[in-house]
Length: 572
Image 1 (tube, helix red, strand yellow):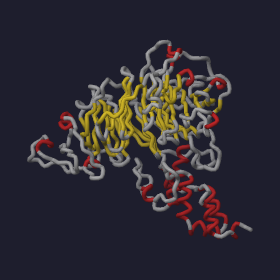
Image 2: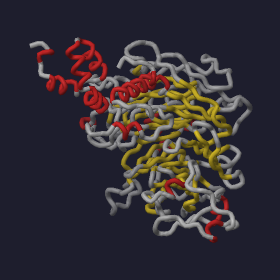
Image 3: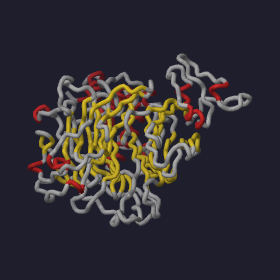
Image 4: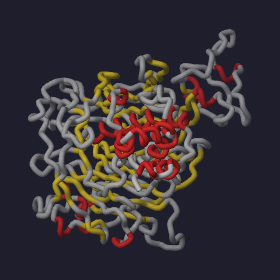
């Protein structure tokens, strides 16, 4: 029996399990099959969106996802705003994935990128609020501002005298968190959420916050709504308070003070992690209640090759189950709830750890993460000089993705540990996978890091060495579970881990694409000083240095738009 002899309902069921490329071929085969696809287009492309994980569902995949929910999902670039069909939704997501990987289908032609710059100046740390389409940032000279992505209009700001230079900034679910000179941490909340009955929270901001606020601060009683009165406004009551809420405007929420001086912080709503290097403790705050809810011991595991040198904290991360700490010589994952509460060992709550000696081991025969063999790959990236980075602004390269080469022989003899340290760590949204990097050019990806047995693993860890032919500095890291974003001395790179465009094929080696070059800084160490990096579904945001003798980091803000080709005709 030929395929056109099958009942339409059987053909439709088959199409539910085909990737987009095969649906396109099926549609072009003959008029009968074209009519089957056209008549059932919405259901077929909705199934394809689920198959390719374009719906990005956190739980079991479901066909019941509503298109409008996905189209109106907050996004920094608004690339789905005009979508009205599942077919168009799939097409735009398909082109976005082409842009991330750098390959248009099976051809060797890289998908073109769109670079937006400069947006802002003197940026130190920044975050993107996709709900209100704003950028929140601190600067190298002090102050905190919120600007519109579309118009670059300043919507709200705190002055330099109030927010210190190089203040660290975190943001999630409408809360801004930033560090103070006195070791305190301030929390401010989006005014739209403060005046929304469904998201309302009571709070008691500090007096200094209410004075610093450029907008009158109401009282936040136990029940909605906030109340403006003479005590709360703190300015002549004859002047009516400005209309609130307003886009981009924030109101003070709380001032948090940990029991010991802290060095690093990470905010993953609703919990704020503040790590103390001196006290060897991680203080976890619930921002919504302004309360310290947990203290976790974070002693670094002893190791003979540390040579008695002190351990410093370089980076921290957290999720609902673990605290991740980059010490100088080790990456350690601590359980937030130790398995054995009665034990006396300081390492009872260690769920996973990697020492620097294992991280930089360049002999494939000796490359293990615990008991698990860890393949080593290298990639030959061009140097900043070869890329011609004499210009003062980033550029989008036209090169194809760089190939990974698996290493089978030792790359170099052992290096002194003083030449290296762990620089950053991030965990996937589902909490299963982690990525960590060293400043000297090593990257380690560990899927299912809690699984200790090699036989119980469905995916293997791997390492990538970027400094085989020329020393590389990894300056920043971002990770969303599907791809890794890196800031190296020669630019911004994306590593795609999951090939969602070809779900029926075995997982191939990751693809590395350079998204933008970054001009070097003209001072002795030659670093690029990318002070912040942000990864979103369709864009990569980064700071780049001002082309002068700027030795203190920071600079201009730019982003690469990977959805620019979404309105062009596609093969899908």
